[in-house]
Length: 132
Image (cartoon, rainbow, N blue to C red; front, side):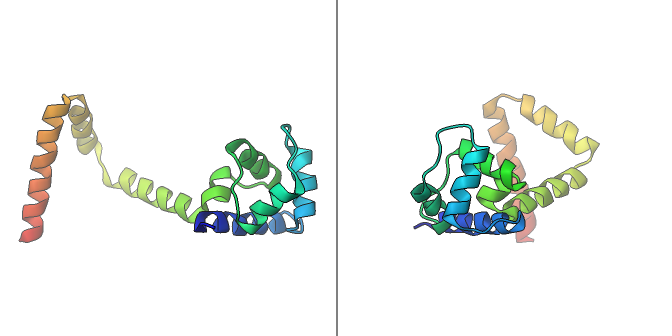
């Protein structure tokens, strides 16, 4: 079993408990099938989710998330990654002013070969600064 499946199983059990459900295969099978409009899941299939032996397909993940009141991203990957993305985005948004954005826009308009040269020049400056 990979750790991604085990971590998903932990998040699924926690989400079920937070929503007021026992994290048991029979409960998951019944409630999931009430909230999913596709082919019903078997007891064995949902048991594998709870044990971390398999991961649901995207459509089933979305149904689980809607039913349990959590985002599909949080259920599948955890809140830590979502929070880190938000922190990185905030740092980027706060650290880049109008002039820098203007330069980035101009950079993106350059042909690929010229972008490569500009990138190498910038990295050379960073390397030289770090050596000082």
